[in-house]
Image 1: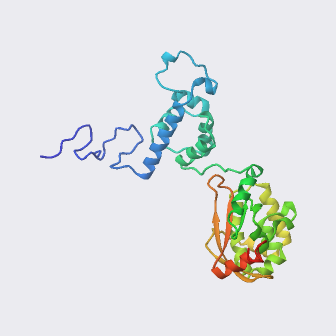
Image 2: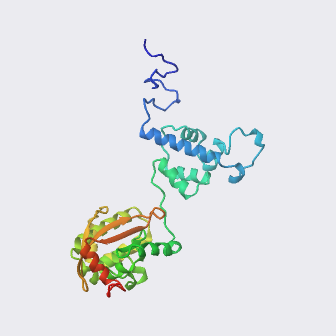
Image 3: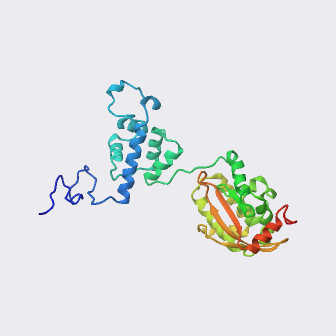
Length: 313
């Protein structure tokens, strides 16, 4: 006996092809797709955020609570606050297959009084890139300094999204470069790489390392075309470094690749350092670069360079 069918759903729990109970504009599907799952999560998030708000919190009259059949705001109130159509917003909360621009999603975030974490989550659920988040460096410098100091004897430094130095530890200053030797407005890893003769003479293979760094920087600049700090760095380095000028024009784009760099140090000789790059979860716009001695021999040499280690302490 064939499985019975009720309301367009066959005996195996699947919706029959061609049967659609979701309303116009929504294609029938035999199983959830990644996109439909994302839209469903977006709809659930919007409903939850709407339910948590009271009208008075967004500047609307409370009215008689007994007349409100829904917790929190009504759909029409969210639509009015964000400046979008009620039908469109209703479809969004129903998980319909509709697109939303960044401008509209940002308006919804404001209407729903989302904090930065909620705003980022909303944009991701809408299939949009997260809004840029820039760390107020002065507020986090002590914590970041403790982090890089804890990595000794590894050389470590942290840059902001402009590749400006924020903090570094003693091994970094002794092995690679002491950023304090640069003027404050040029305390930037690109300036160090392309204009510091000591760093260049120490690096066994300077050009591949410089090209790799430039490629990462080129990608960052391309994502912030109106950023004046990037414009300043590029303009001044174009004048100061013929290599930067020539390679910049090639428009290289290359993300970080694991690598081992060689350093010919004037005091301890050849040292090989294994490179790591990490983004702190709490500050994803910052970049931690860790340079670990690649072998035990390299570790012994690096350790001998550190203060208090000359006498075997």
